[in-house]
Figure 1: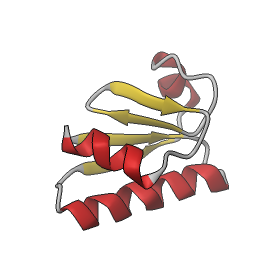
Figure 2: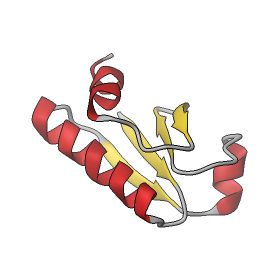
Figure 3: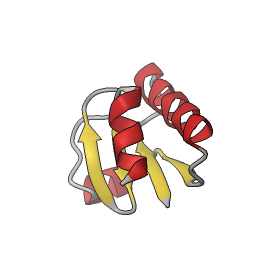
Length: 77
């Protein structure tokens, strides 16, 4: 599983990454977590507002920090 956090390094982007890593640790799910800060790459996903969360190439959420339950649902699918 590959999880990408799209954003410029703002506090919300950092919080998203922290929350994802916390859920992965709690669930024991293994995933590669990558922070993407390149605007062109972010736009290629069709994301106009960050932070955004992409799992295996699919945008799951954009424009807000996801909650732990949302992330848990997505990584357990």
